[in-house]
Length: 168
Image (cartoon, rainbow, N blue to C red; front, side, top):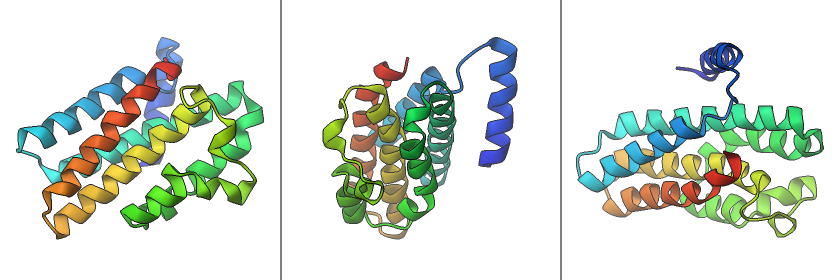
């Protein structure tokens, strides 16, 4: 499902149920599916890459919803979503420096130092950054089957779970 279809589907579901666009329960399930699949040793890598796309789509919806309630964070949330294609073109080391260490935020005059690491703003950023990092690791694994890449993907997703409580 592409982003446009996902946005449309979530909009219909949200309007019908009154639910928030950031579906934390589904996000958690997809994270658990990925981690379990990797740890079981029976991972369908192409499927797991597609799951990361779903996680990213859910996170983008959550950011858009967050902007509606907190327009003061629009610049940051829009920056993160615009940068997703560039993130996907990075190496794992580049992602670490740019997004896990936060250097990319300097482009808009921001820093992780000013954010609560367990607050909604940081959590939303992590719901994009960690699945993109897992996506990179899984994509690299397709070309170079190195179990360390699978460990990286699972670790990234295990980390993002810590931030989901701020979004519930």
